[in-house]
Image (cartoon, rainbow, N blue to C red; front, side, top):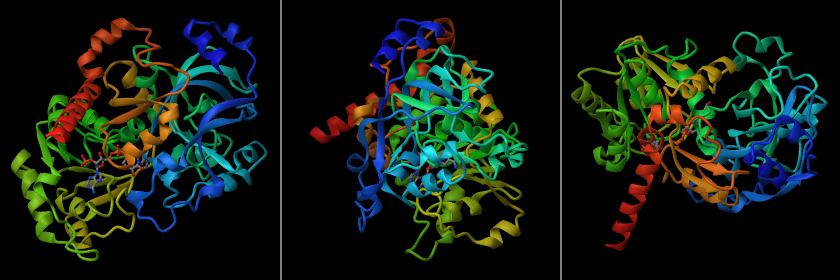
Length: 458
Ligand code: NAP
């Protein structure tokens, strides 16, 4: 794949890329089926992706007619790679064997190793015979909605397709490698003003936040809506904040440190709660919640913005759902897409029905929504929230940082790109957006690290 990397950096044409042979193997990050029991008996926090994620050569898969082969320049860490690498809540090999049973091309996915990763940017190096809209040489970003477009149920909202899957989590050959094969309907143009790693970190969380807040399939936020955003400087939250600000809403961010408050202030969010400083105890013990703590949280929100949230952007799950349902405004909506802290959820239903609130679920985004979210990036109306970049060989370290919540925003991973800041084509647009925005999360991360380092020395 190094020959492709060199050619891409040298600006090779599609024809030149077609003349480079596809190798038999490529470098990728994967977990192994014979290791799924390695963390048995350990608490979740002690399950260490650095031990389960391997980087090595694997065979190049055959490309189906509706697929493209991509030289992956960069990828990113999503929480689903953390789940896969700690084998929770289930090992993902079950997904691969189910997919493998569904058809001829799908059989390829059922392997004793799972190449992970659900984001990527790169260059198309081969197109399948049924691909119409893309050609070799196109610079692209990849979204992770994996659907069979011959399934009728995929043709209203493809997230409702009976066979909908997430690429690199419920399918093999994910983005954390030097090559991937993806369906042509997963491809979007790479924003020209972004580097490879800046272009690689957005699609999964940006599109998810778009659907949750902007789309009619989600909360369809309107001007003036108060939106409570849990994890507001995290992978989902960092885009949610931008959507609320762009759309004339009033964000209330929840984070867990004074440094993250500063980061949110610099994004333009005035109302921010430090959940650690506030020391909310929503759960009295493992089985009982404390309504007075929900009330205290609600009062803190009112003190900041004068009213209750129209929308709660929810993903922590068990720890926060009771509070989220309680603090939402009468008629408000709790948009949920995850349950990082536990999926057996408990809330007081009286507060839901008596105040006509609703809980609405969301999961990734259909192609149209992902395309719209990418279009906003292309137009410079959103910026990537990349805080740090790792090399593919350090992918375990990168996943560990996300697992331990010691990161901000998104983490980029360099695959074929040998350094950061490569692949930028449109410097005029870059100037228009401004380096202060494009590097906001990275500048903060450097500042946080310096502070942590100094605190460690004292
Ligand atoms: P992330 O980058 O780790 O951010 C999550 C944020 O949640 C953290 O920054 C943290 O912020 C906050 N948090 C952690 N524990 C918390 C707790 N006990 N109470 C309140 N807040 C807490 O992860 P992400 O990419 O945003 O993803 C979040 C979740 O959504 C994951 O479970 C992921 O798998 C899921 N997800 C689902 C979809 C989908 O399509 N369904 C898509 C993307 C992600 P503070 O510590 O600063 O509060």
